[in-house]
Length: 304
Image 1 (cartoon, one colour):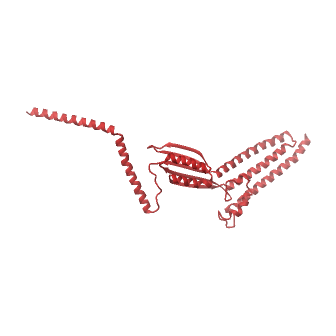
Image 2 (cartoon, rainbow, N blue to C red):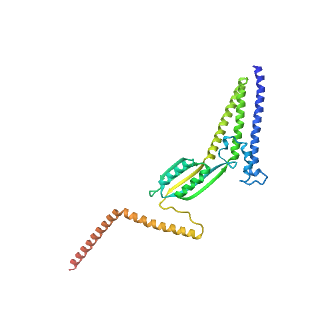
């Protein structure tokens, strides 16, 4: 058994050298990413310029599968929010689902509910390729009134490359540990290697899950969409003083018209109750007049 331990020590030394080499490779990849960052460049670099000449430097750190979703040499996650008003609620929802499918996206979640006065409301979370996001929003704007729109872009290139470096380092350590298990050694050494191998595999799976998640968010932009059914679509106000005044006048006229309409509907819808109240009031007036007339007659008889 002592001879086997002596044979095991050189193997441990080889493992240490292999791990050191893998760590150095990971550090080199991280240094490479830092050199690519705009704040660490001294050549007058401006975002969006000269990227074609530098893409090979970035791509050399990426695997073939990770190039999907790469935009201008960077990894970006796009999130947009949009609010739309429509008088044709059902038609717009049908058009939305059709447009999402035509543009290669999918509906992640949807929620619809009533919001009073017979009007409805829908909330969608749509996943769409980033290059198709604008086309989808334009198609929605043609079928409804866009009340608001916002878009945020998050550059995750550094995090993406760092995650890939961790994965490469962990794979190297895993392979070295597996090779070490094939060599003869004491039971305690084998158990120690197996324990470390379990830790490495768990870390590797975690980083791979993070990379898959980033790939999914890069490949499919997220659109948070709110659709309101309305009786009257309110177009965005024109810029300038007269545009604002015109918008206010139009809104005031609509509110006054809505008030009288609601008043008429309320009266017409409760006409039966008003008729009953009118009948009761008429009976009360008749009885009151008769009572007053009788009092006058009694007073006249008494005086005579």
